Length: 395
Ligand SMILES: Cc1cc2nc3c(=O)[nH]c(=O)nc-3n(C[C@H](O)[C@H](O)[C@H](O)COP(=O)(O)OP(=O)(O)OC[C@H]3O[C@@H](n4cnc5c(N)ncnc54)[C@H](O)[C@@H]3O)c2cc1C
Image 1: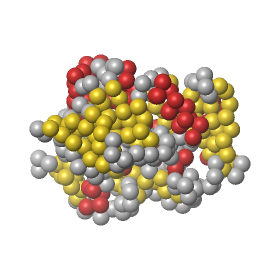
Image 2: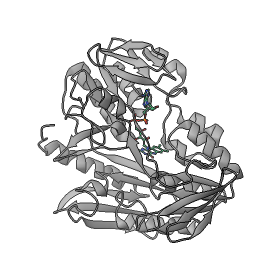
Image 3: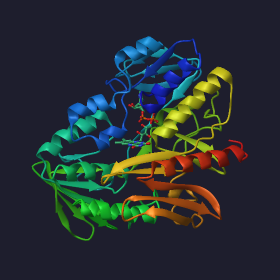
Image 4: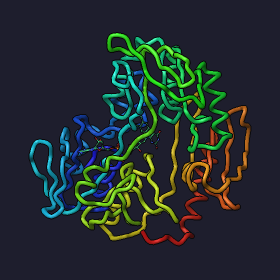
């Protein structure tokens, strides 16, 4: 279930691994399956966006023998009957069910989010809407200085808009990248004309006649806005699993093989929380959805076990590509409560070509690179080698 990165790759990987039985991809959205990364990076051009985002043309699914059920919201899982129930009342039987349900934008509890001109970004329809609004908006406010907010800020600044990012944390990408990269990006965005309001919470969003007019910050500033995009993270889509009696805790809980408490149901991608070393993590990345799907396909066809991914992520913003390997900094024990990381910086930070290696107690745990793709690949190889030699804990 789900026609995003995890769902599509499950179908492809199952066929590649020799699965001969029927495969059905069931998705709530009516569009052909598409990728999300271009939605925040290329939303200046709505027409190009459709082509950029599409995974495959419709004919691909026929050619590999994957049935698509689009515009089909699943409303229930009947584990005893091994069926899912669609919104239309139809029921689909399964031998094995893969939950690749993704996540949805985290709501921000401030007044004014319902005004016209205030939006979130998760779907192609969201991106088309933002794209259209960007054409006429003069002032754009992004609530949240995470990856999506900063990629949108880059697009809007390039279009000549007056752009402000309001971020409650004291620095950009807090918990996602090291202070070195955070500071570098702060300078780059500022140089590109983006106004950054760090350590500043949004108090409320004001409007006139139902349309957005401004964002009021907790310190009393009023930022005028024709378009506000709220980008404060995502929450996993776990409700169906919970209603079906599967354990859920900020993600559908799975074991080392991405199997839920029900051996006939796996969960992958943004909606799943899996064992990683001595903790459980939930990762929102293309890599994790893709690798999880590939793992489930391998497990269902050959029984090979043990999901041991090397997490990685990328972001295009402020004119640079930022590449990350390893868990985000916040996942090393939680923000502020984790062990101190030692950083080793190589290259030319001011010139936008550098890498930052992160160590905990002398052990390499990941890093970031900007304009140094080879350094990024070397980090992934190093993490893979260390994962291969590590003993996995039981899920
Ligand atoms: C704007 C944006 C930019 C991003 N950029 C990057 C990037 O640069 N790099 C990166 O690594 N990651 C990026 N990500 C994150 C990445 O796209 C996600 O981690 C990835 O899509 C997760 O795949 P998934 O299959 O788990 O979930 P999704 O791709 O979200 O797919 C889940 C699907 O399940 C469907 N669904 C949910 N509930 C139901 C239901 N009840 N019935 C039927 N269908 C249902 C949804 O409609 C959706 O189509 C970005 C995300 C966004 C939103």
